[in-house]
Each structure stands twice: as C-alpha cells, then as structure tokens.
Image 1 (cartoon, rainbow, N blue to C red):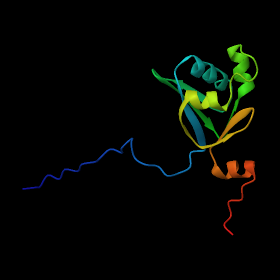
Image 2 (image 1 turned 90 degrees about the vertical axis):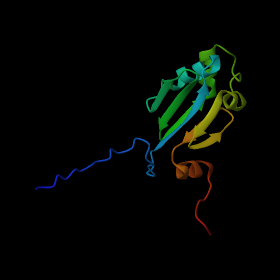
Image 3 (image 1 turned 120 degrees about the horizontal axis):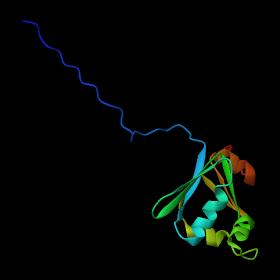
Image 4 (image 1 turned 90 degrees about the horizontal axis):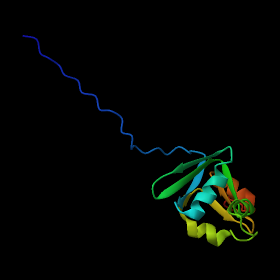
Length: 126
C-alpha cells in the first residue's frame, strides 16, 4: 500500500512586519473644511499621494514634503497668516517621519538624517 503524502502551504501574511526604510513621510488630517483645503493643496505636489477616507484624509509623500502655509491661505481665500503651525496641528491627528515647524511652513522628512542636516544637528556621537 502506498502512503499518501499531503503538503500544506501557508500563505504569506499581508500583516507581516517590514523593517526596511520606506522613504515615506506623511500625516493624517481630519476630514473637515480645513483638512479638505490642506489636502487639495498637497495633492498638487508630484511626490504626494492624498487618500480621502470617511473620517480622515491621508497625505503621504516620498522623501520630503513642505506644507507651505501661504499656499493654504490662498486656497482658502484667507489673508496671509490665517493658516499656521497651530492650525496645522489642530487639523492633523497623527504623522510619521520627522517634522520641522518653521514660521512659513511645516516640513516633513522621511529620512531622519536629512532632517538633522536641515537643522544643523550632528548625529555623530562624540
């Protein structure tokens, strides 16, 4: 009598961890009037992908992304200075990557070394 051998294969999990660098940065906005304006402005950038969801808007970028406050003021039809870091923080629920606030923009970096270089921070241990 021959024995019947059964081989089982487990499919790869779509939820497995991946520790390789993605070169991505981004943030999640509330899906409200201000969030929609910010998303519309950010969607014009070549390296940015905007994903509207029912209660939030995902904004993801490769490498670096600048949230230029004057562009958002203009899109909203508001005077310069209407949108600022405080307004951005209020609309944003979470982010990933390195964030640097300046007077006229918020900059997101995927690579921490790029962010450190931008602000003149030496990452080398002495």
